[in-house]
Length: 481
Image (cartoon, rainbow, N blue to C red; front, side, top):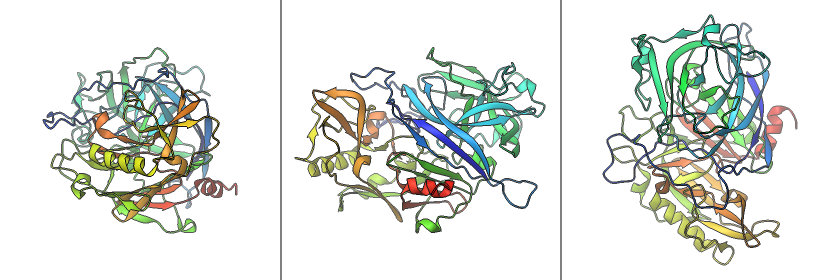
């Protein structure tokens, strides 16, 4: 087993990891068509960050093939950092905001081991490293580059191999052959900034856990749009359902997490877990399809969305709006890499109208048609700065097949950092309109998952949900309480 701890800083911007999908009825043949995304008009600069940092205790439990009969427990550090725009190129199913708060893990790669720091991303498949043929002069510090020439166990993947021809089938941009007949991969933003290199395998070490032959991208050509890209992050660790994701390669049967809504502590477990001490889980099945569809991400953690309640009132929304169409548009996915939750336009509008109706006379709406927080969150309120707490708010429940997620209290409104109108702070509804992002999907972000035990059972293909006091859960599993 592996245990990690981290510290995360919250910033003004966040990432989102659904496909970039056009809402135009005349959908393009290629869903990865470049799009121009307009930023909201605000008084905040592009580099505005929230200075409040919070501790997030993370546990990753990974069963390994050790020589002993029992899995060992190892303690390793996790941290977070602000990744400048353009520094971490991702497939075009990643919308780019100006800053990205990323959870990173420090591990070693190669033989002899090289220290690297990788962003953990449940919305991506291919793990990859920035590669360069130089040696880190300080072996105690993570290097922003991995040197493949210094590793005796590094092995490039030929383009004729089944790894290149079959296991890359869900890559947004198909793998190809380079001049040396090696498997070549390209990751690209919608604005054409990109990173490319060859697929390879090498040994990854998590503490004393040795994992040989792990496949990743060794990226040797990258384009960055930000001169501040002096980050020490070496690459990205893909954690979705794709065949080349880390959880797939290591055959991880299950992972779980629980994020506190009070002090932002929490836990993430990768591997088997036992939630019996916390109550029963309600399960909803993962939706998986074998036929590729242009607007359906087959590697995402997709579930069946059935409806929305505001307080106990079930909204009158047609069932057809929650079902993906023949192109795959309209899927519902859980994504730990996305901060807030985004709903398709008609569903969002119904929720927005009812929440407005139930908060009428309680909150003062921000009357500014030109403002939308993070592009898609256009329902905002003015709250006096001298007010110590928010008024009582109606809860919002997301109803899935077999399970329900109830969002309440401070989870429903998010204070926009450094934005003041008169003597008022600005708070925005934490649900957004997917249409304003050009995305044809429902994305359930991690903000709405606070104080929920979330279990992803990859063997039984289901997601388990249960309300929990995640700060207490973290203390219990860390042995602090």
